[in-house]
Length: 344
Image (tube, rainbow, N blue to C red; front, side, top):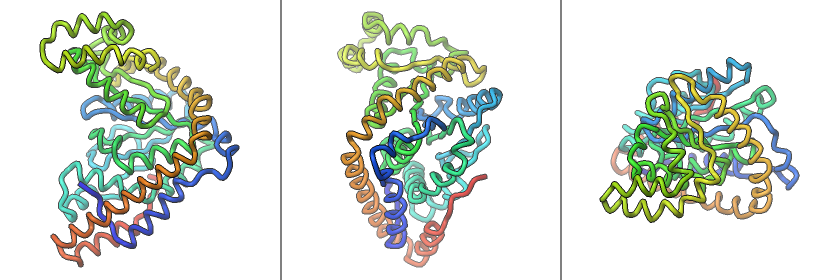
């Protein structure tokens, strides 16, 4: 499930990734990051209602005369309910990637994201032209959550946004699937891992509260004893593990923003908007100073990630050429190297 590339693609990728990874030139450039637009990265498991919540949020914000810009990073989605300004599907053909490089669904999604990341400076250029006119940039990510959160391209995209605009992460959770305390703990562990991976202002959106109110989840997050009582009714090994971890997670719960929302009815939209404004302020007061202190380490780490991704591209291309013939792959490669990202 590695991405494919060649010398030409490697050069293109190195240039693009290098441009995305360059600091603004001086410390005061970071403090000059504008207050608007706020970039919101929507992350959530398949079926959590992430894209539907994106649609609801777009409708809500536009009804309030807010200026919204949307980016879709899911190359495998068939239909989107909300209007898209930049769509990965317009530049990278997911089925072609799967066919020509002999990849499965997840491998093709990862490869498509990697290819898109090589041109991500074009996305930033398009946003720069409109930034003064925008209030929010909403970014929809693949439902295969690990593909974005743990891939090199996901890290490049996340960092590129964070050093350019105020950026926050929204983790969308299916409330109805958290009825069992073990499933709830699993979701919270994932939220915790995303928070420490991105280190960005974080919001947990408990979706589908029209089907299942999230009050019991708030109780579990605020009262260690109540989640312990719920877990005591479980007898599996996983329940025992969850009990031992729930106390350690108490500090995480205390400092996390959580909002109950409904993508269908619009319930909780006002609370979510307040959480976004809090996240915007946290970015300026906490994340920007962190960038100033850790800039060199962040840049070195990002360069290592880029180099690893380039090696993966080369290995993937060599495997594809051995299996499918150099001429065919060279044609596909030329096509992918020359694509440019456009607005709709």
